Length: 511
Image (cartoon, rainbow, N blue to C red; front, side, top):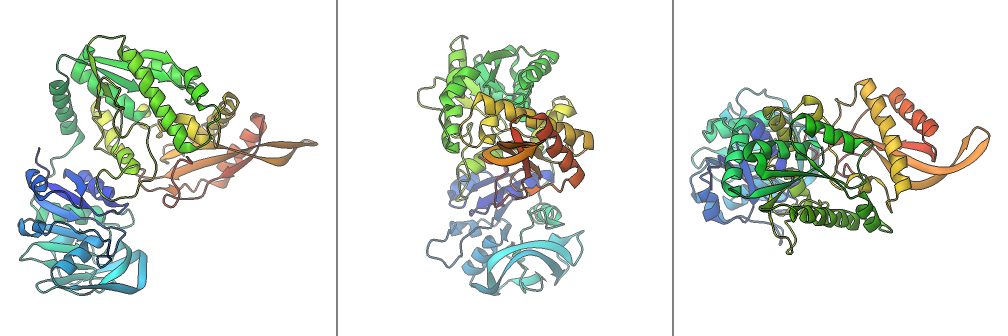
């Protein structure tokens, strides 16, 4: 097991993964482990510091999560965040009580002392609070180092035991100097160096893949999206002709996407095998309306198609996928008690009947890191700047049953929306943009005729990693052009709506 400078113990916060992302942005590698990770496994990572994440529980609740208290005897610097702060307070003899006023949102952080954890950040900075409990009094040996209007103990420290705690969430975007605070903890308190970058990650992964694959072969599923393209390029450099890249046209792609994918890999000299399995996918989706069932059918069919192709080649023992950290996090609580949001078709391992092992070189990195990795590998910026596209494709952007007719309608609407977004310059300013066919019909008037046609929803969001997102404030004239063109140019659609929900509480995709 390699050295991990910072280990984050996950107590179930939906923000936990942002801690890792912020630290990695600062060049400090870290890993997230469950709150109940065995102490010997934590020690084996040779960490220089430990962070206790936030969480949805109360420390005094009957079913609350508690760590192995041997953590406190390792002599390592510890930073508790929100729930982590309350755990520290409770363990060392302080008091945690329900707050008379729950605190959610922005707060001004004022310094009580000139502490190294606040180095090069201003007093009065904005931080993000999200808690219903509070520290009533500090444990012996701790000192208050910062406060806010509603949190008298917004940050505390015990320099002797090297234990620190924040009531606020530095990892959240709204904490304006949060990344710097986390880096200060890693650099000035834990003594970590900023050595983590995508160049070193690429070399490390290539070395791992060569050692693992040996003289065998790897079947790589390629969709043409950012993730699978980066995986295929990484493995092509590492393995050469031991890589067998396969593009499956599942009939659920965007307009002209199959042709674009083939052209891109041809230009890079990668021999892409293309399989048209659209009829198989659509026939299996016939009559299916439940979104989770759609995802599972698509995932299982992908695996089946890849297995059939693998049998045509000697020596294939591995299947490579573009699974990301966020896919893993949102699918199942593999890192801790975080709640399952939805399943992903490429997460959770392979079925028992499969004859090859899974390779997921991007499984522990975030989307923005994948794009940086792509640049390191020489992929064009235009391709790497493409918006995320889900593995199940347009199937989860059609509410209810997926039909060829509905796919045609959705593709036409999507092309128009993307054309308008690109021409206005907003495509590169947003994280993801797409249309959703609601399969809800409404009355309209076109010319002198009454219509009863479909409704399309336009979904455009701003985000940094997809873990959280806000709806994009697109100028009304652009939205008006999108709506006018879709209604005028796509027969069968007479109403366009705009999704103004953020994540959370909504997800980015509709299904």
